[in-house]
Image (cartoon, rainbow, N blue to C red; front, side, top):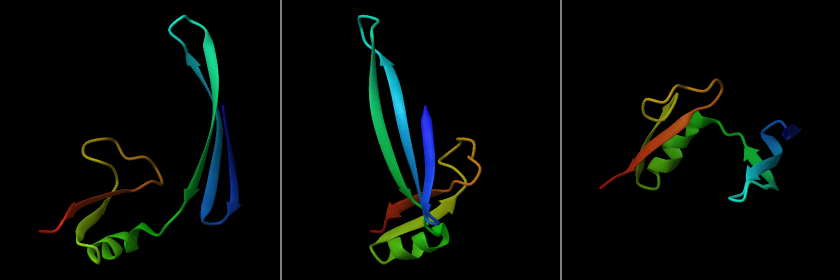
Length: 79
């Protein structure tokens, strides 16, 4: 179960209740909170290059199908 909130235009929060099966077939509940900050991904390669990383903005990692609205940043440390 997930509840999403948008406390600010550049931030969203996911509060989750996750149920996991134990080895004895009982269940346990864990609560997770993910605070996500939205950034302008077009600026990230330039920011990383200043720290010795050549990066690209891509629609996904490798051959994984892209997720609508998300971007992957793929980079390598410069020699």
